[in-house]
Amino acid sequence: MQFGKNISKLRKSKNLSQEQLAHKSGLHRTHIGMIERAERNITLLNIEKLANGLGVSIDELFRF
Image (cartoon, rainbow, N blue to C red; front, side, top):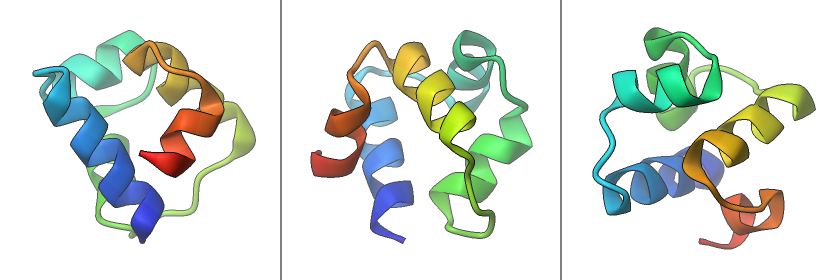
């Protein structure tokens, strides 16, 4: 659950909507929402896509 909260905080700190992050990361908007609410498990590939979309390193997603 903390990972989803970290994604949400990082996304908001960069003034991105879920839709904008989805576009930047190549994921679907509903998938972003489900990750943020901890309703869906995330693959390592999608973690990398989210990090790239947010412009941060993968380890920053876990320590934000």
